[in-house]
Amino acid sequence: MPGNVLWGWLGPLLVAGFGAILRFAGLGRPNAVVFDETFYVKDAFALITYGVERASLGKVEDPIADRMLIAGDTDIWVRCTPPEADPCPLYVAHPPLGKWMIGVGEQLFGMTPFGWRFAGALVGVVSILILARTARRMTRSTMLGCLAGFLLAIEGLHLVLSRTALLDIFLMFFVLAGFACLVVDRDRARGRLVDWYETSPLSEHGPWLGLRPWRIAAGLCLGAACAVKWSGIFFLVAFAVMSLIWDAGARRAVGLRRPYGGMAGKDLPTALTALAAAPVIAYVVSWSGWFASSLGWGRNWAQATSQGPAYFVFDSIRSWLNYHFQVLGFHTGLATPHGYQSEPWSWPLLLRPVAFFWETPKSGCGTDSCAQEVLGVGTPVIWYGGLAALIAMIAWYVATRDWRAGAVLLGYAAGWLPWFYYAIADNRTMYLFYMIPMVPFMILAIVLAAGLVIGKADAAPNRRAVGAAFAGAFMILALINFAWLHPVLVAEVIPHAQWWARMLFPRWA
Image (tube, rainbow, N blue to C red; front, side, top):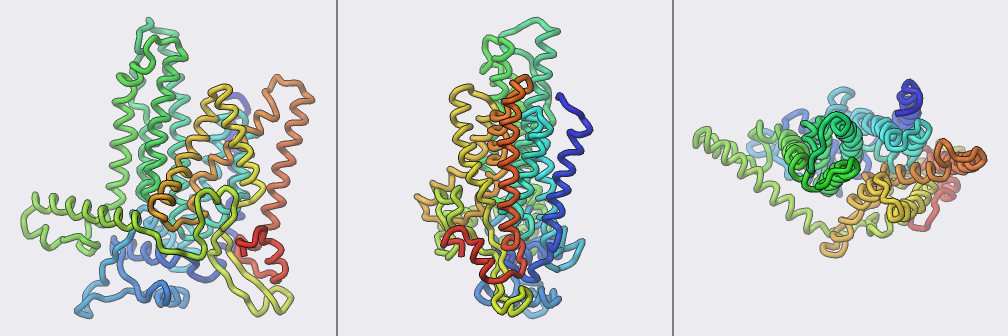
């Protein structure tokens, strides 16, 4: 890869460091359990305490356990009868991996807002580094790679979810990591194919390219995405197909007569290991706490152990699958109206964000009318610029079949289009922050478009100067827009009039 190797790492690391300051500064603010943290904070605490989720005091309408945690009391569990028994099992709708990760922060830093938000902030920072390095690899430009990381660092929805103990930031992280591994695998596989082409006699199908550890790593990451939220399956399927198409394209590029036959015979068997077996292993391992405990929902431990080891294994698997069918029924019937719900078509336009936290403090802003909010919304300049860039990617792909444009469009479509089915078929309750796995691909589209505007290294100097000025102006506008929104993204106490001025659309308020 051309360019200075030192700056190829140092630049992205500096950008990630900038993102870390934004995400860790004041991470414990607000000192409250915000929005859906009411579910995942306690589930994570139960996992690190008991290995499975347990029922806590109160309901959504009266979250007694939330108030106890903020007061420093961690004895929040509902006890099953008789009174001295263990806490009651809890039915949950999402796999456990994301909650285990939240629990790591709680174990390290205690049951405090900083503790339960630590893991999300950490993976948010690492995702900035991954995106910067991936964009650099895709564009062969350290500058464009750093631009991608910088835009993710100042992206509002990414910032909010990095500073909140919800599952979606972990889903985004593993999807992005899986994609990044596949991009590396593409380069490595093509390198091996070129080496074979230069040193071996030609054949119709070409060689077997080995086990390809980067593709196995991608499968593990995408399996981990499914172990955070089931919507990770959309990316797993899309990226598996994409990887195989890349393989066939590589074989065609070196002139093999039967590239698709070569892909099917040489690449598909190892792809099934990497992108089918590895994800299943990652997913099942994430449930280790449930398998190892007698306390989980639907576990049937006593019944299973009374019939011998073979029946124990059989009944454990049967109980686990039955649990999954219950969860599937829950997801397909999830249509409870909510004040912050929105439709997928409106998400790219940022029409209806989610207020994660809202208070009107009596003081702290210099006036007698203060506001404090965590608003889950993207940076508008980046999102609207991203829409234009995605349209440009469609035109570029149609005109040139460039793999980078196709990959970005596929990643965005895999995360967005399936929700239209659920909106139409199930009338499912959905929220803007479901968009977070698509945000890295939106930013990649912006960076690729910026590369087209700037031009190749051998383009006319005036052309490159104008293109660089245009890209730089966009970056500055995005930074100004982010700085303007920042107080309502991180719960700063500001005058109510300043809060209202930041509400771009009526439905933001």
